Image: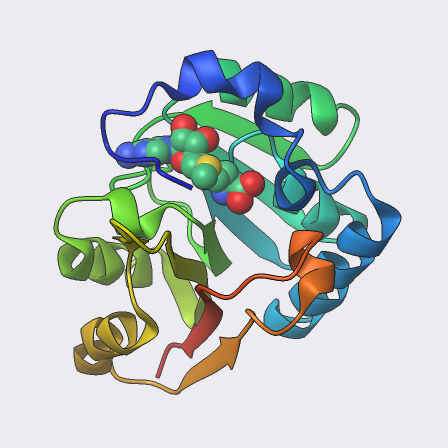
Length: 199
Ligand SMILES: C[S@@+](CC[C@H](N)C(=O)[O-])C[C@H]1O[C@@H](n2cnc3c(N)ncnc32)[C@H](O)[C@@H]1O
């Protein structure tokens, strides 16, 4: 993965789901993510905000598990695909900035973000804003990593947990590199999820 802030997500949207962990089309990959998500999200039904939702693959898993989903993505093409993917579900998709999602006064039981935080300027400030979008007892579910070996990009787990520390609450780190079912192949770079429970 070599995405950065200049990446053209509108142009990438049509082919995005071709990667096994993006489209979750392989039943084994899909089941692996569904199992993790069930562990990370609160009991259903909960209000889940999926930021940088892309084509809505995780949004769909959350909706299938009985959650009400709001997805936000800056790419109009991604939002269009997410709306198609979740047509008829209890889900709403908005175009907007994940760093300052256009959700007004609405608050959520979980803010779910996969492979987006590392691209945002000032992630510490963004995490504080996301925590403010949670109801009491809510949680951040952050799936991130560091990709590539020559010029690695991403956010290492120790940096992300350090950014979360000032927010208080319990932080649980789950390493994901050792589970090829999530990625559709063996991987040897750093991949992980952090669940941060608000205090
Ligand atoms: C690697 S994809 C991840 C998509 C989805 N979270 C998933 O895991 O399948 C990154 C997504 O974040 C979106 N994105 C990047 N920067 C954003 C921003 N500042 N605000 C909203 N969406 C953003 C892109 O349009 C793209 O859909």
